[in-house]
Amino acid sequence: MERSVQQDQLFSELAVVGKAFGSAKRLVLVELLAQGERTVEALAAAAGMGLSTASAHLQVLKLANVVQTRREGTRIHYRLAGDDVAALYDAMRTVARTRSADVGRALDAYLNVPDADEVALVSRDELTRLLETGRVDVIDVRPREEFVAGHIPGARSLPFEQLTAAAESLRTEAPVVAYCRGAYCVLAHDAVRLLGGEGIAARRLEDGMLEWRTHGHPVEVGA
Image (cartoon, rainbow, N blue to C red; front, side, top):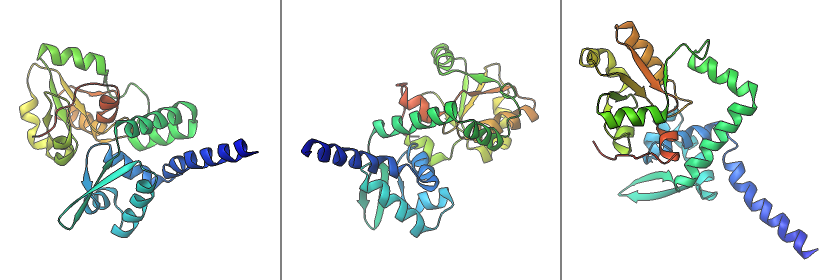
């Protein structure tokens, strides 16, 4: 009987972590934190949430020990508790997309992808080989602060809203590869389409920074 009680307690504690991921709003916050540390205010603004709403959801994540905090003056900075949390989030998204047709349809609608071949892809392994040759123009179209928090070595920061103005600098013989936050991020898709409209052939990384990091590829920090 005692062992049964202990088992119930064990799985109840395990469920705390599962419940922390059981909210669309909290998943948005985890997606943002997978890119790097942010203040509560920055997270709320990026997620389109009120400050009190974001704070409440962050407290749930903190109580489940999947995020950690540090204080700098009056500001509180949040970050994922470790790479294992990012890997768990990555695995959850992969399972959801693979096993749920509803998730697949919702993702395609969000990315505005009528078929899988509309935007040309580059795998992580292929990008690694291109980086080794030094003949590739890798552009990070995420917000600048996310680039500084961690990016693919050799990439340059070109936030999406600056792409049109920077298009001329991409008219080189080197292939252009764009990436953003991850497989569920629309920025790289839109960047490839925008550059195509400017007459620049570009491809996007098959997923993004989250998967690059969780699959053990090197990450560079700073500007």
